[in-house]
Image (cartoon, rainbow, N blue to C red; front, side, top):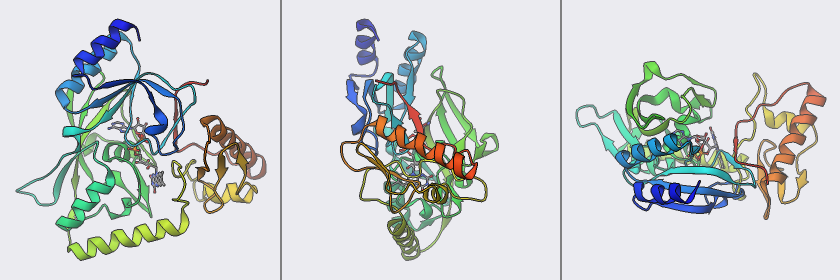
Length: 305
Ligand SMILES: Cc1cc2nc3c(=O)[nH]c(=O)nc-3n(C[C@H](O)[C@H](O)[C@H](O)COP(=O)(O)OP(=O)(O)OC[C@H]3O[C@@H](n4cnc5c(N)ncnc54)[C@H](O)[C@@H]3O)c2cc1C
């Protein structure tokens, strides 16, 4: 980005851009180089203007939620990282249809579940403990315990790459395992869910149960990005990695968790390079021993050093 582009970006965004911002602050792995520019979008109108500018100037961008499924390489991200806050964290309930709830894509899942518990809205409890945003969860079709968020989505509001606002209902959304088919550069800004009513007590109990199951099986005391690989059909990536004898394998500050072999944890001072080396090792060993090609669930972005 040249000096003029930086000045323009600051002006158009209403001074909501930070330059050379460490992505270790914006990812749950707590690793990664700097984002050349980090834009905290607070409303749709400005977001559209900023995206049009970035596209016109040929400046690459990505949108991130909590970075809980992202591995940013140590060389950082050239271009702009867009985060959603302000108006993108609001929740509104449909007055005529109590089962419909619209949520800003930047809202943390934990905050959405607090509201669901308070209002006695059921259907999303399985997401408890997933440290992402609503937009990130929909983009990833996040799931747990046999459920996926995509099944509960009624419609989305989006900003397209050219800076246009669009509403898309579920008949036009293609969800699959840990994925939603979206055109490149599209930003989800709002999600409308179709949910059911239950008592506050039952919603609270379901959330508590899911959190307990998670604590028992996942190394939540360390920074990570959750499951690194997708589960192959009829098998578990964690089981295959464990069978390859890699539990506890350490490179630099990164380790394949002893508690859950599909988690790579940052034991302290890990770099993205350490994590990538463990990813490659796990892939190679599982392919050599079991003949299975593991596919990444986490998304890797950014440049090498
Ligand atoms: C301890 C732990 C446990 C986890 N458990 C689970 C689990 O049980 N199930 C599961 O599915 N995942 C799990 N995850 C992974 C992760 O939390 C989810 O994938 C989450 O939904 C990602 O949300 P995010 O906001 O952090 O997205 P990010 O990681 O920031 O982004 C993920 C992808 O979504 C895109 N994206 C983000 N926001 C938007 C948006 N508004 N519009 C368009 N695209 C967007 C990004 O560009 C990126 O490609 C876990 C992670 C951790 C650390």
